Structure formats: C-alpha cells, structure tokens
Length: 510
Image 1 (cartoon, rainbow, N blue to C red):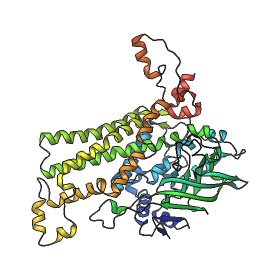
Image 2 (tube, one colour; image 1 turned 60 degrees about the vertical axis):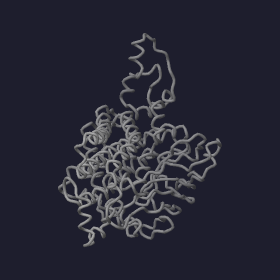
Image 3 (tube, one colour; image 1 turned 90 degrees about the horizontal axis):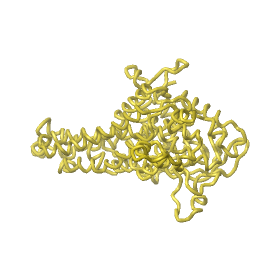
Image 4 (cartoon, rainbow, N blue to C red; image 1 turned 30 degrees about the vertical axis):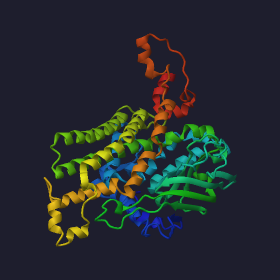
C-alpha cells in the first residue's frame, strides 16, 4: 500500500519513550520540539499519493501493487537512474536537500540484506538454525507492504582506544541472554539520526578491534519496545518561518538509544555472534546509503552554486572577471561532484541478487572530493556575499514605516527587488551560519564514514597492490613480471567481494 501521512502521524503515538534535551516527549507527532519534522515525514508519504507525481515517485511491482519508489530494486542502469531522479526530487522538495534522513534514505540501507540473505544466516554464531535468511525476506516484505521507516543505528560508544579491551568492556549494545522468544540485549547505540521518527530501529555494528561475539547484532526492532529510550540532542528548530525559512521546517534530531534488557523477537534478528562477518559487511550495508549521500551532495552543491550566482547578480558583481572566476570554482565543484554520480552509475555492476549497483570506488571518491572541498566553497560563498550574509534587516525592521525607505535603498540591487537580497541572505544564513546549518555541515563530514576512513577504504577494498589490476599498465610499461601481492581485501570472503564488484569476480574466477 501507499501509506498516508495521517496514518504515519498516528503511528508515532505508540508509547515510545523519547527525550529531546531535558524534555520528555509525550507524542512525537504533536510536541513542539518534534512536530515539524514529523509533519515533513507525513508530507513525504502524502506526496507519493499525488496522481501528477505517480510516475516519478511510485512504481508497480510484479504483483501489480503500486509502491513507493524507495522500494524499487533496480535491475539495470535505467532503473538505477530512475531511482536517483526520485531521490533528487525528494531532496529538493524537502528543506532544500537539508534532510539527510528522509525515509527513502533510511530504508536504502536494507538492500544489502535482501540482495543476498544467505551469508547472514550461514555466518551467524548462536542462532541455532532459526532461519535468519527468512527473517530478512519476511521483514523486507513487511516494510514494503506497510511503507515502514527503519532508522539505522550502527555506531557504538567511543572508548579509550589506547586500551585494547576498551571496546569489549564498553557499554556497547550486547546480547545478555538468548531464549525461545528471542535475544535479550542491553547497552547503547551512541548515535543515529531521525530515530524518534522511525517505526523500527535498524541495528548493526561497525567492527572495532576487540569486539566480542555478544556485541555483534544485526537486525531490527520496533521503536516502542519495552526498555528502549531514545535520547535526542536539543532541538535546533527555529520558531520563525519568515526569518528562518529552512531551520523552521524541522530538525532530524540525532539520538543515543539506550536498551535496558530489551527482548528482540527472533523474527527481527538477521545475524548475531560473528566478529569476522562484522569485519566484512557493515560498509557494504551502507554502500547504498553512500551512493544516496553523493546524490545529496551533488544537489547541495547545486544549491550552493545557485545561491552564489543569485547573490552576485543582485550585488552587481557577477560580471566582474575576478568574481566570475570565483563563481566558476563553485560551479565546477558542483559539476565535478555530479560527474562522480554519473560515472558511478555508468560503471555499475550486478550484485549476487541481480541488482544493478553503482561503482563503489567512483561514488566514494565523489564523496571524498565533496568533503575535501565543501568548506572552501562555503567560505567562497560567504566572502562573495560580503556583509549581505549577516547584515540584513529583520522582518519587523523591514515593515517599520520609518526604516523601510532606507532599507530599500540599502538593499537595492542590480536585478530584482531589494527584498530579494534579504530572502537570499536568509537561506544562506540558515544553511551556513546557524547552529542548524553547522549540524548539517558536521553530518556531511561524518555521515557513515568520515574522510580519513573513506581514504583508507581504497586500499582495503580494491586490489591496489603491485600485483593488482590498477598497476597492470605500469607493470607492462616498465617490464615487470606479476608478483603476488597481499592486502586485507585479498582475504575477504567471496560473498562479500561480490557486493564490491559482482560478476567481475565471477568472470575472473571462471
């Protein structure tokens, strides 16, 4: 079915325990600290029911049911591009691409499981043949049929890294008991985004040295299970929609989730007990989310460039050659980011389940490029604005009969109306010069994998040794024979490699 916004809002009043700062939230759908973002999510569902958007936002599945495009499992490049255009529309519709955790983003992280469920069951330790692969298939079906929102939680508490036993002894979530009903877990997941607004929490692990088998848990659980407390940071929502056109629309609210001896039924468990498996799969679960992140970053770069051009045209500086060269840098930033999206799609491959997956190295390098240059591009934009980024009147000042004539003269531009400059400046302030905007900047820098980890993954996940494919041309030029190299990637299990370059490995093996 296509869920309605009304149904979603009603579902949030389910007894879940949520705190925002020092305030306990009685109903996420109606409380002033959470209401705005809940309403954005409800709007997300209602958009899919608009007839004029049907072809863009929905598809008809093999059973003849119309579904949200967020559930499309793309079997070829054309379908992948169709999914990307869907994401782009959602991003641009919701708060100027400033909602990194809309439901389509959250649920994309489930794809690796449903694409190849068997390894999750076969590699488990302690599940005693309970059919975990079928759990994956059944939950996917449940999520699709009910348009569920499943919020990922993979990050464990920071620990003293100088102590090799620190992670094993940390308050990270762990299994304290298994029984016929399910697994009993206790501990915390230290950060997740939009957790308070999800139907289910998606539990996983980013492997750390020293992790024990009881800390390896992959699966889902309802957000309102007894013993779960969702503790969100203070809300950064602004109450004034005129002065703050973006930050007034809601805050996703990053959160820590506490589990006080919570029973998770077996039907929601995907994998437990195997640290070696956890070394292989967390990044691959997030591959789909990282491709999505690059799409979002390309859209955000487009907005940044557009704002720079609009402001410079209004200020009358856009035709100055020195300014044009600086604007060209920002435009080039967007073009280069977007080029990585297109290249990753073009160089995609087929996964074990027959999905068409964009090239991982290309979309990861696109994310690297964006993160390495975003701060510089924002600085360029602010500098090009001059005083206009921060020195502009409030709405009350603008409406004051004695101030208004002076303010109109002060903000008169080369194009458009004086008030246009204020509207541009308000958006720039919200995105780049407020706590709300700073949180978004930080999210981009640490979403899933920070820059340093992205760089190190290159040497771990691709065969970039002296004997690898990347150096083949150089070896030929200098006349070197192939000698066996060794990387962590070489020892990776075949089922995990198949998520990295799919049938390329199958062809090589044949």
